[in-house]
Image 1 (cartoon, protein in one colour):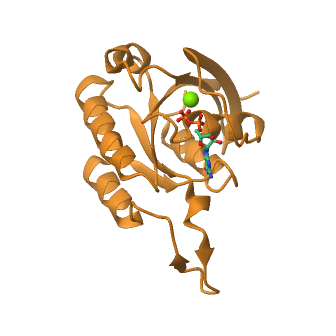
Image 2: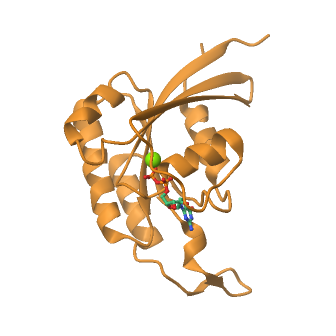
Length: 181
Ligand code: GDP
Ligand code: MG
């Protein structure tokens, strides 16, 4: 019987980038094409085992922070981890993500683990046989995401809640950085 570490995790990012969808994929391995927007805050938990640790993610998926930025500090206070999500087809959502990262570094707990997620990877459409993108709706390059992550010391993944690409990986990477005990 391994001890369980509870980890409070919050989601931040512009409306419609896929925050709730990433949580739904992680918690229920499901996806909804026309997801109803979150009303208020949803609270979900998911346990996972990483090496010799058991982690219970306590996930606060919020709506309203998108429009009422003043509510956000209430959500991220005491959070040990945050997913800052943007949509790789929406440059404005990447600018917004930068702002959230800055705000977290100024206001949140100083050892918060932040994962930057460039979501909707499935929308880049076509890759050639070598796996290189040949046709794309991409508007935010992978380098822009990587650079921000390097500058701000973030985990970074491009994800798709639709195909499940890299979704578990994000949470595993966060779990790996949580000190046990
Ligand atoms: P939120 O407002 O950030 O919580 O975004 P939602 O999770 O409600 O998603 C907004 C819309 O984007 C919904 O219609 C989702 O089905 C869609 N969506 C979310 N994630 C993805 C994804 O990875 N790929 C695609 N193609 N659509 C997605
Ligand atoms: Mg939502």
